[in-house]
Image (cartoon, rainbow, N blue to C red; front, top):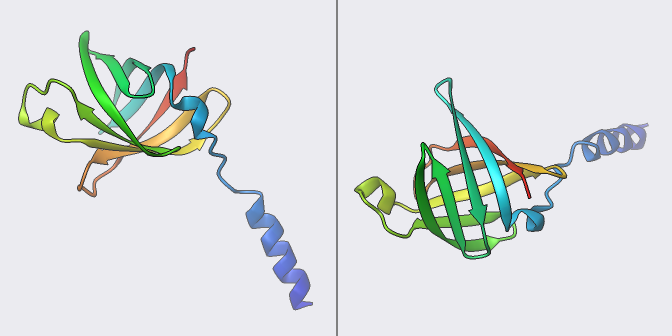
Length: 122
């Protein structure tokens, strides 16, 4: 009888595994949404293997990319204009679909994380 319960539990939990096919999101054109304190922030960005160019509030920002693994990357602003832009950002892809991914990010070394969704446009 115990075997039956264990088998049932394994079956239930195996249905809830996160799907992460991160490689297809390493490059492309994206649109992202992040909600912070009830405010929705959006941006568009183009990502190659080593560079990401983002447009946010009509301002262009470029970052060098260092991939830790297929699902984690560190962004380093190329021409920082202030102290905040000098801090590297760590982004981790949590789940993926065929055209989007859910992510969390934070400044390197900080514990406070934000979450968002990015949609691949092309």
